[in-house]
Image (cartoon, rainbow, N blue to C red):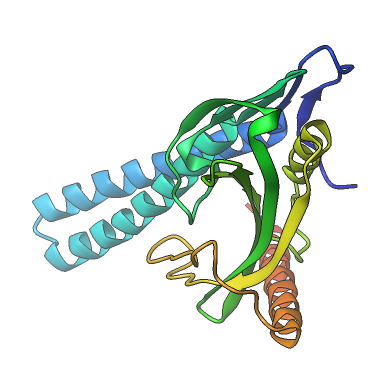
Length: 247
């Protein structure tokens, strides 16, 4: 069974509160601290080498530190998204606390909204594929459509179709649909630009973009599954080498 978001059970009169699971929040926190520490140490080494006039080596280490700083910013944004996400279902309205980091590609602004269920038209969802360096990443995004015509980006599940898939927000979307008595519209699949490792140079298609043909969707699913299998294999090999090499 996939991990579910933290939820406070209730009946129809008490609030139901959804948050990202605590294990996901703390894992993201630890990753941010580790990457931040490594980046700081690399930058310190680069400065030390430069002062000793090791220009080429110092520049190389500084370039690596810059790359690590970009990764640190990426996981820090993910941390903000996981830590700040909160959805509260009240008897007559929906309360959304949506941090900016709830999407790593769409880059939505932070929003704190209270929306009566009568103002909700539907919840929309689509699969999004992002290619990068011969790999493929699949995620499922959710958007709240209001009767006034505006759309609110809710959240997304990532790494779909792989062994590291963690669909944590599907349950929240289904709870909103059930409580507001509105449809869940599946818009199919689109393909965006994954840039470099889905960190730099990414671009999400417009929400009105048409769905890809079924044959292309199946190909992207297979590619994403192969990417996930490759990532797990690399981790296993690295651990095996570390155990064989010893301390």
